[in-house]
Image (cartoon, rainbow, N blue to C red):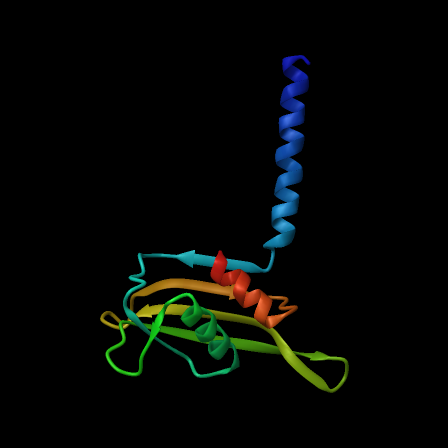
Length: 127
């Protein structure tokens, strides 16, 4: 195989790899701005999405407490109609805020086009 053919194969591989990756993560964004001390305690918004995130993080050893928390996870979500009468969560986004410096956002995340809320949150937390 000559050099030119190898280059084309590598470019084709990278192009196809990029298409596959963009299809899997086209609805996920995650921006980590600063380090997060996993050993510190967290507090989270009390809503349907926040409860699922909290449950998943607790199963991974994260500490959630009502007193003396270092981080606050703020989560909001949007709805869409499924069929004509059912509402379901379509997207959500959130910020992880360092409470010692409230204007300091440590991380941001969002998912749009939610298909299965539990699976999408698990996917986000593994990312």
